[in-house]
Image (cartoon, rainbow, N blue to C red; front, side, top):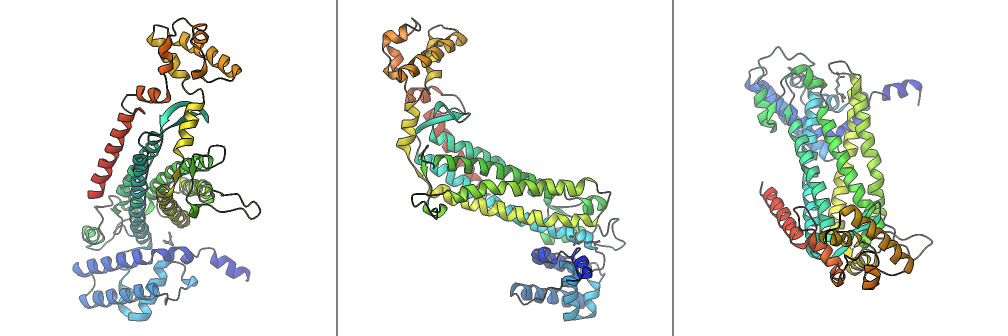
Amino acid sequence: MGLKEVFSDYTVSIHYDRRLYKQDITGSIAHARMLCRQGIISESDAETIIAGLTDIENEIGRGKFEWKPELEDIHMNIERRLFELIGEPALRLHTARSRNDQIALDVRMYAKESITSILSALFDLRWNLVALADRYPDSPMPGYTHVQRAQPVLLAHHILAYYEMFSRDSERFEQAFDRTDVMPLGSGALAGLPYPIDRQFVADELGFSRVSANSMDAVSDRDFLLDFLSASSICAMHLSRMAEELVLWSSDEFGFVRMPDRYTTGSSIMPQKRNPDFAEIARGKTGRVYGCLIGLLTVLKGLPLTYNRDMQEDKEGFFDTSDTILTTLQIFADLVSGIEINANRMRQAAGDSYVLATDIADYLVARGAPFREAYRIVSRLSEYALEKGAGFGELSLEEYKSHSDLFGPDVYDITVESSIAARDVHGGTAYIRVLNAITAARTELEEQHGQ
Ligand code: ARG
């Protein structure tokens, strides 16, 4: 390839913006209809244009369209083909329009569709998380802080924590949708247009809830993509935390879950291995999603108003993020529904350790000890038990009493179950609270499903 070709390729975007062909054509059809209604082009021209655009959409759909890099982008490729097909009327389509408002329109339309698919995948994931929690409503496990066993919780409570995260992600995508749902066509290159256009008609045709208020902002603004990319980044972070737990939990060390076979692979040399590749790759993909957000923030940060060609760099990161998030959500929704839980092993891990230490301190508080003092006593008691190699349940009453005379025989009533049952506050892990949370989540999902 000669230098000249290298340089001309530099500005070409058709290899990625061809993805926008449906939006570009649908937008052009609405524009042509509006031009005709307003008497800006004739009815017969409008009909010819619309028929030609429909043919082009079919050509592209059937893989019969010849993409021409020398025409640079999706708009020029379609417009030139329209001219080949219908001749002179094609030259009237771009009346009262600029590629600057056209591309803003196409990307907004694509983003709205993409968010709709993501919301539906998020819904499935949330649904399946609640179903999983519902399958294990009273299974205890150790809850962790610092990856150290901390206090017993119900597995369902842990799972519902993810439900909350993904519900907030849904809200963020809905907000991103709302900001995207603004119709920019009619802004022209930057200043508006000297034609009697009807912007509301175009918005209605294309299903936008409102039209943009300022033509200069409309061709400069890519905030809606930043909203999308930041919602995606936060969602990717949640997916990655979940992936990390699945990787840990499926290890021999934890042995809490077994991933569905379709989401693990063997090692080429170690026959016993079941590597959690899907979870690892999901965790790894977080990097590229964050990268796309930072990339676009950086592209935009120094741009004077209005349109600058730098903005063409908004698309690849956006498409990549949209694909990555949608696929990862779909995989996780399926993975969650196929996961095997080793409830016994979790129960054992909750009972084996010193996770009841806080409850023993609370026991002393109930008998009048100040909490800090109780904490100190139990901390010594744990050291003592640890040194002896005994669990709390294996210490004699004398041993308890030698640490504090507030201890009585009912200290043996402190169990994993009593610890969980005691957390009977709104948002706590007590069985009844978790059951209510499952019901609340179900109701919320059913309401959203009906919408
Ligand atoms: N390919 C361009 C983009 O993605 C389309 C708009 C081009 N506008 C222009 N004035 N060159 O942003």
